Length: 224
Image (cartoon, rainbow, N blue to C red; front, top):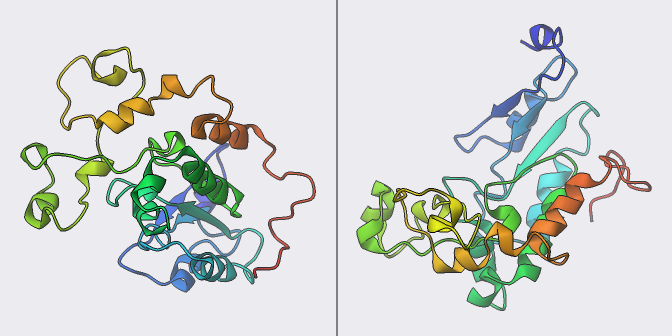
């Protein structure tokens, strides 16, 4: 497969190795120039507690790989509660951290400073918390069956809030599949564009920087 892909420009393969596969197995798919380009890791998504040990263990697994072994990291996706709520609820500030732009900025900084490709789930760049979806509006069978004991998946699948002055926050003129959380409307993209301290502006700055900032060697750094 890699030999075929290398015949074309600008091709990039991402392996999704699920079913609780070990990091060693995940790395085996990308460790070498004849393997896939990267592999999507669930190590952070599957953990409800953020800790130094979690980060260290994830990074150490890649320390002895070839330079061509390129990891990918994600903190949120459509099957997990949004990271601002999942990890914010475990912080000393509890629910307040969910909507604190400083907490969102810290999470985005961490994601973008890890060696590898950052997968940013829609709304993470805005610091969106898990949406509150009333029971009568739930769509996900798992969320309905486990309500109210778990956060469910619907809260991570609500419409992207673009513009507070438009119907449905600019997502659609029609009634969306899931409702928009009022807290998301307050964090809509148009409210953050011109704020240099917003999570959106910070994330935009990260992606505008060189891939390898001066003085930072992603292949040669100790993990403490």
